[in-house]
Image 1 (cartoon, rainbow, N blue to C red):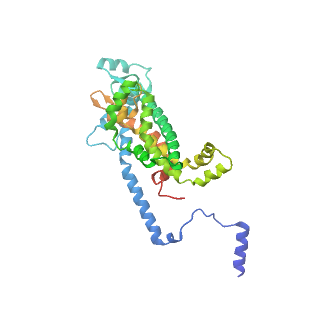
Image 2 (tube, helix red, strand yellow):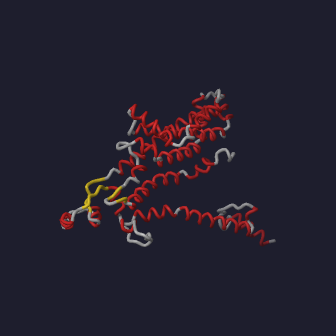
Image 3 (tube, rainbow, N blue to C red):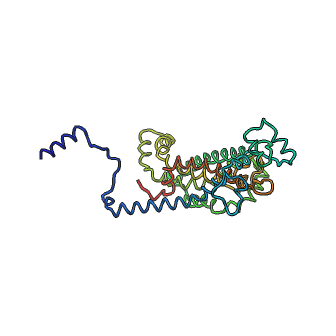
Length: 338
């Protein structure tokens, strides 16, 4: 009894010997339950590794020299090379034997020029890839902001107001995504040529925003429906206007939905291929149609395409990883209730 009292006194003075860092449900403390969790974790890791094989292979191909990238059977062990990235960011020219010997005698060559000289090529200047990547960034970000902004306003109206024919309007908005982009490419192309929006940034921003709008409206409406309308009614009673109630009540509560919707819209606009191929040619050309069109001397340079695909993948991965905690509610809205 004295030892128990002493233990209580010591605990009261010093607290627990180690902090509690996890909480386990009562039905998960058995050995069978913990074994099941471990098995599921192992299976998830194995599936993730299998799904990442194409990405890993793309990364490996991006740092291969052209002979290694086109070798058959494929090489797993190779000497890393920056030839793919040099070919991605520069325009090069194949040198004759005499011109190659002359270039090899120069001592003022940069690191990149020396790397190109190994393949018997000379760098003529920068390529268009940086500009195309910048076009992708501008068009994707601007179209996402436009689609989310318009989608939020429309979703709030459909959620809070009794609009005549609301179901029909919502179905009509959704029906704009039922047709694949290729089906409407030719009519939009002719219209853009007529109004002067072909190969322009504003044309691509409007096009992507319109196609993302239906997705934005439906997804955000689900989030706004989950916000109790009593919050706004209380704010209106306190003297807030409808706009103030929207800005101070609804907007903060829908941050999760806005982030999830923005991620999905950004991914669509960033990866879109068909419209970018047909609606642009030079000034507003984005990276997706430009990367597979990379041609080298004597054929397709797969290591250059892999390097471009790897660099194109990085920004959207960073954004998705940064907002990953919002994506679960984005893909399960309506199924999770607070």
